[in-house]
Structures are given as structure tokens and as C-alpha cells.
Amino acid sequence: MRFLIICTLLLSMIFPASAQVQTIRKLQYTLPQIQDSVQYVDAVNKIALLYYEQNVDSAFYYALKARDMASRLEYSKGLADANNNMGIVYDIKGNVQLALRYYNDAYNQYVEIKDSSNIVQTLMNIAMVYNISGKDVKAVDNYKKALGIGNRIAHDSIMALALYNYILQYPGDFKPDERNAQIQRAATIADKYHDVRMQLAIDQLRAENFIANNESEKGISMMKEIVARSLKMELFFFSMDLLVNLGNQHLTTDPVTAVKYYEQALSIAERKGYRLYIRSIGQKLYDYYMERGDQARAYFYGQKLIKLFEEQEEIDKGSGIDYIQYAVKDQELKSVQLKSVYSKRFLWLAIAICVLTILSIGFLWRTAILTKKTNEMLRMQFRQLETTMEALESSNENYAKVIKIVAHDLRNPIGAINSMSSMLVDESLTPEEAAEFSKLIYDSSKNCLTMIGDLLVADFNLRETELHKEELELPAFLQQVIKLLIFRAKEKNQDIVLQKPVNAIILGDRDKLSRVMSNLLINAIKFSKVGGLIQVIANQTEKGILIAVKDNGLGIPKAFADKIFDPFTASKRVGTAGEQPFGLGLYISKQIIEAHNGQIWFESEPGVATTFYILLPNVAIVKNNDDVEKVRSLS
Picture 1: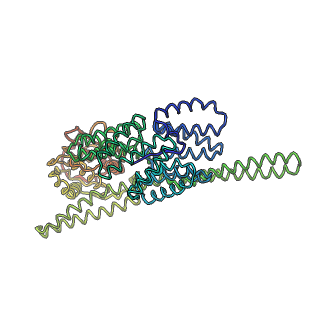
Picture 2: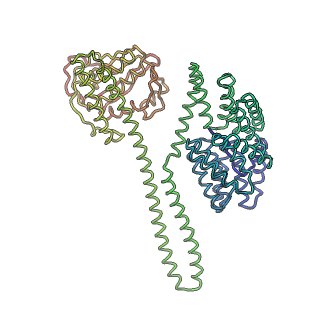
Picture 3: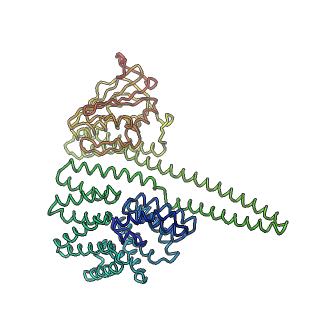
């Protein structure tokens, strides 16, 4: 949970949000009138800081603007303030890794310019990020380091904030008398600087002290008053923990009131984009309604959480590149730029010398050629580095896909092994039955090993040349696949029926076609009702062998039809018994069938049934012993 994030530019601590808006407008109005570039950077940084309570996106825009200008001007203080503001933005957005990166950058820059007050506040911000990440030892170390430095500086306004956050997050680190003394010390500092916002925060600590000392009624009453004051001042981020705490206090005694506080906090968090609060409060409400059996409301908040996690995945993808590699690349770019600056300065000096002597012209000409070659070589190395980075990123993505595909494909045979192993434990089995189960377990484990070997050497775009084709008796092949999965169907009291298949011998990769049929049957089991019927039909048509797997389950909505065969598709639903979807099975099946020069498609009526079709071309038919009339249509 996030607490109070702030910087020692102080403006956002002193004024309520309404006054902050007026200050922002005043600063924006005066920007064109500022002549000094350094003062302009400071003004932009102040606007960024003031915006974080009102509009995080605007805070980010001004922080980036200040950072770019400070970099061009080589203004260390402005660059440190901008990095700290960017850390605050990422912190509020929920990306703690990038927040920690920018806080650390700001801390190093403040140390370089010996800005003690801002060193204290960046150490405090870093400690709060470590607290969120569950790294309590590092968090406490940074708090103690911040307090140690803060005790030695004359301008001690930041100490009230550091003490507040430390006591709020780790009250157990202080004995009761010591905690009261530190709270009073923070209050004295806040009164000294007339810091209204900090005074509210100190009152919050006092209210929690009352609750901890079994004076709940007094503490809750005080907390309600603080919430009302903070919301009136439009200090929305500060109000979040107070609202959540009030909800926690009422949860056991007055659940209706508790939910009202949670929903009020969630509404503010969604409006302001406080992602960490949206996640934690949404989880609380979801758990609350699940415990009370209110599935509809629990589902509503569950959908909010799913959407939030999907959005977070997109954020993570955008910042998922290894930071060390990124830092090396960034550092090399800075080195090239620095060398370019020195080259230009040297060139101007050489031109001046040329005016004095003819001999210097030849020396400078030779130096210019060497410099040009060096720069070209550096540019080539930089391009090679970029190419290598892209290849590494692509490789990482491929490895991630391999892991997910291995996990998905091994579920079916391992599930079969598990089911048959449980049957072997039954002492009532005859030796013949036990032997049959042992044979099935052996076949499934062999499939697992073969599958792992294939996945370790295979590409994602499976080609026909990678198939290990052999002659397969179609009826026996289908019966074997069904036999391995019949135990899964029995768990839901379902029947798998193989209608009399065409007596044909086909040419195909046994293991991979078995994976396709297993995927289709597992889906049929997953999405069919308890006690349902699953049919497997195999006929010969004018175009080849047509295999159909028909269920009587949920059906596929039209909105999902175009995406159902996509890898890692978002068009996923849980099964009729709550089975989790993975979004890989149909993608893998499509790859395998197309490598056999075949086709796979489906027909579905939502809520009634779904039928998946596999068409293997005539060239795959080695022999057909059935004297039956060919089916004239695929429909």
C-alpha cells in the first residue's frame, strides 16, 4: 500500500489542492516571462510536482520537459528534481521498478551537489518503494539513513515527513513512549513551518495510536474528521489510506459502512489513476463478496482486477528490457556524444592555429581524418549493439513462448498419468486391468518425453520437413487418444463416443496429431456440461479425411471467432467446472495441421454446441478399406 509521496520543493505540502491549482496556473502564466533558463527549469519542475495530486499525466509531461532542458543546460539540480518527479509519477502509476530507478538517479545527483534536504527525501522515497516490494530490511535501512542525515541539517522541514512515513509503515520499530515522542517531534516541525498537510498526517498517526491502545471509538472519530478535512482540501492521494483504514476498522462490526468506505476510495483511485490502490481495494471487495457468496458482485470486482492486471502486463512489456543492458547502451551513447563535443572544440582550436602557421594545416587535416574514422567506427559499433539488443529481445520472447507451450502441452499426458496412477492404487483391479493401466501410463510418459524433445529443437513456425510421418491406422489411433483422456471425462461424468470411423490408413506424425486430438478433446471436456456427450466422427470426403470433435457445451461467441486460433489469445473463458484457460491449445493445433497441409476450423452455436473439424488432404491417405460412399460436402 502506498503512503505519502512528496518532494522537498514544499509547495504541495503547504497548500491544499485548490490552492495548488491556482499556483499551477500562476506558474504557467509566468513561464513565457522567465528569461533565466535555470529559473525556467525550476518553474517547470514545480509545476510537475504540484500536478501529481491533480493529474499524473500532466506531472509526467512537465517532468520530462524539465529533464530535457536541464540535460541540455547541464543543470544538475534541475536534472535531479526532474528525475525525482518522474520517480513519483511511476510510483503513483504502480511501476515500482522504474520508480526505484529514477529515485536512485535523483539520489546520486543530490549527493553529487551535496543537497542534504533532498538526499533525505529521496532516501525516504526509496524506502517506501522497498516497503511496497516487501523488502523490509532495505526499507528500514534507508529510513534510518535518512533520519541520520536529517538530524544534522539546519532546515529540518523534511524530517516531519520522514518520521511520519517511518512510524506509519513500521510502528513496531518504536516503543510506545518513543513513538509518542517522535510523533510530537514531527508535530512541532509541522507547526514550525505552518505545514497544514503535515499536520493532517500527524493527526492520522495520533488516531491510529488511539486505535492501537484500544480507544477505537476515539481513534475512528478522529480519522473520520481527518478524511473530511483532506477531501475538502482535495488531497485525494493522502486520503486513500485513511478511507481504507476506516473500511478495515468497520469490516467486522459494520460491513455495510466498511464497503461504503472501500467503494469511495476505489472511485477516487480510478478517477485519479492510482493503480496500486485500485488493485488492493478491488481485491478487498472481491474477497468480501466471495466470503458472503455474492457471486455477481464478486465477479464485477474480479473483472476490474483482471483488466488491471492486463493493463499492467502492457506496462511491464513497455519497460521489460533488462536495465543493465539498457544502461550500457545509454552510457555508450553518452560517450559518443561526449567525444563528439571534444572533437568539435579541438577542431575550432585547430582552425585558430591554422591562421598562425601553414604547417599546422597538415597536422589538423590528419587529425580530422582520424577523428572521422573513429566516429564512423563508433557509429558502426553502436548499430551492431542495437542489432544485438533486438536479437536478444526476440530470443527472450521466444523462450517465454517455449515455456508456455511446454507447460500447456504437458498438462494433457501428465493429467492422464495422474488419473491412471490413482486407478492403480485401487487394490480391487485385476492383474490384466493393472497391466493395461501400466501400458497406458508408459505410453503417456513416452509422449511427454517425445514432446519435450520436439519443443527443444522446434521453431514456432512448424514446417512439414520437421514432421516424423508414419502410417497410422485411423480407428486404432483415435481409440488410443480417447482411451488416454476417458478418465478426464469421467471426472465430469461425461462420455466420449467414437462413431464408426472410416477404416483408413493415413500418413502423419503420430505424436503431433495426438496432441491436436488431445487439445480438441480436452477443450470439449472443459467446456461441456457435467454428464455431457462428446462425439468423435471420422469420414472420408472428396477432399480427404474429415475428423470432427463435437461437444454440447458453452459454444463460442461470434466476437471470439476471429481470434480463437491466435497465440496467447485474450479470447479465453473458464470451463464449466472452473478450469483455467491458457490460450495456446488451438494455436498449437493449427500449426500442426497446417504442417500436414491440412485445415482446421469450427462451427458453433453459443450455449448449445461446438464442432471442430480437421481435414487431412487425400495425399495423406495411404489406404482405405471401407466400401462406403464418399461424403459430398464438408458441412
